[in-house]
Image (cartoon, rainbow, N blue to C red; front, side):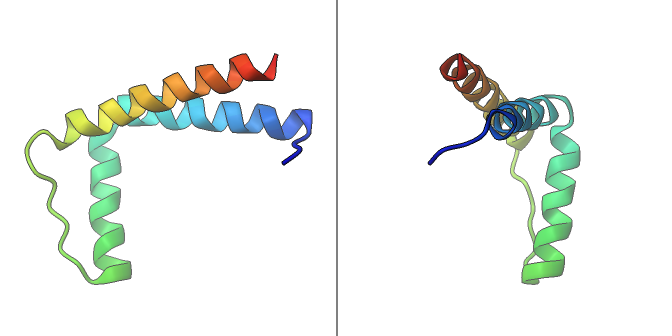
Length: 74
């Protein structure tokens, strides 16, 4: 797949921003998931203990991925 310079930059920035959001506001993401599951799937979503830490771990993974994507763009 060929992406333009702007599209590649948007992928990098979007991945980095998603990682930052996961690190800074994991509770907000979990609440959003709870509402989304209830509204769209009619499912009661209850995060287990340690869910915030796992969301933050995903954020670290996203930031690492953003760094790799940025490196590959050069």
